[in-house]
Length: 214
Image (tube, rainbow, N blue to C red):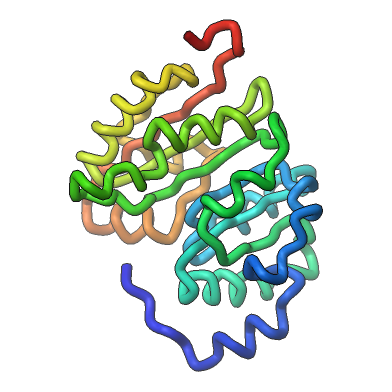
């Protein structure tokens, strides 16, 4: 989904620096308070719904696309007086990984990530084995990673990545329907793809104990 720059974006961002930051304005010390992470938070609907349903958690949404980030901030501004447990960060996730402590997070969410279809690009996929090493480090002992996509090739390859990395036990739900998995509300992209008849795939990965990892 291509997103254009909105005329109102700069104003919305300047008025809501409490819920939306870029890397230059983000204090690394603040990251220690977050318990769940969405990588590629898009327009923010999924993360905002979770933050409403689970006030005991604190959610960080990382989004590299500046236009999507601005829309997420506008959506977040509508609920920030009632929901104090979320923040959106406009930054590449590679810059954020080192800031997390080992075993910090309860959950990581990868929703409709860029499929990077060209062979030379595939190391950039969020499910690639080298990425999984980062997830394993920052998830708690019983931490869980949720990955969903409509892209058949990405999903098939990702299943193989999880087997290769051998850091997580995982289960697959396909086709996936948010109505049947009520702890994972739909994203904006899911609604769009489902309306077109696309099949959604879900992989739920549970961190293995260290002694189980070969």
